[in-house]
Image (tube, rainbow, N blue to C red; front, side):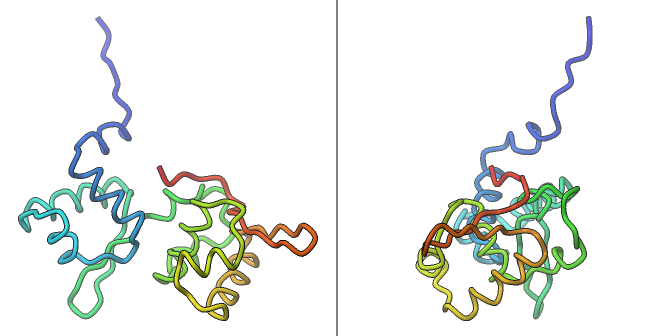
Amino acid sequence: MGIIMIPKEKIMMSHRTRKMIYNHIKIYPGVSFGVLKIIFNLKDSTLRYHLQFLEKGNKIKSNLKNRKRYYYPNLNEILNDKNIKNERKLLELTKIQNQILITIKRYPGISQKELIKKTYLNRFTLNYNLKKFINMGIIRKNKENRYVCYEVAINGSLD
């Protein structure tokens, strides 16, 4: 009788509440502990347990700012880290940059006009960050006639 090995990924995301928390963080990077507590109606200890579990499993990361903890999806979950040219800079993405990257990953071939609508960012902020991503080799700009669209240049998964 052999031992059946269950992949770490399945164990990590097998709990319904944990999966919901993780999906919420993917959709809304930079969400605070307090907001998560209200949305999921959880006790501090329960929420903290699931967040620590996700953080130890490298699914999410957190930052402490002004005595509040904010949660972000781990970039290794979004991008395939062996292809990243400048990993150090990627780990320091802002909330806006995370939002742009996740939106482009979710909607490959998205135009700048659609990106503005989905992210609620102004054209100048979006242009600045798109150029930065293109220079880092993370995003690819495709041009067909007058239509310009963007897609993530590195394979990865948000699921």
